[in-house]
Length: 95
Image (cartoon, rainbow, N blue to C red; front, side, top):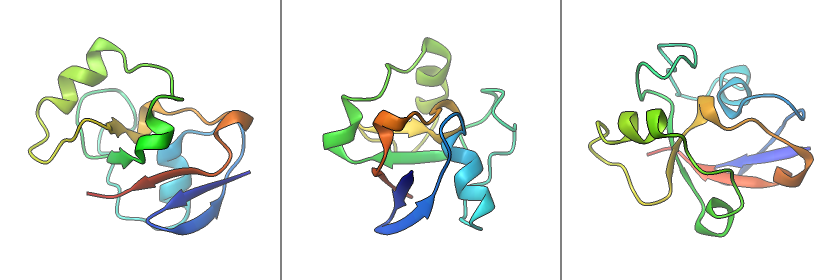
């Protein structure tokens, strides 16, 4: 399967977090807390067509996104998006 970051297709595996795909490919997603929902340094903007297809963000993720200056309606934390085959070609951008 593939995910698309800023127009570039990257190989991904079902069960993998979006943050891990970004890190493996050297993208500038910090992920300081390693997915423990203690920061928002893995903030991504999900393309609108994909946003509604993702599971809803948990309250803890929403709380962290409230701290992001450039958050948008389709903002998510990459550490909280676990890829499944349904998300093949998921498209996101870095803020």
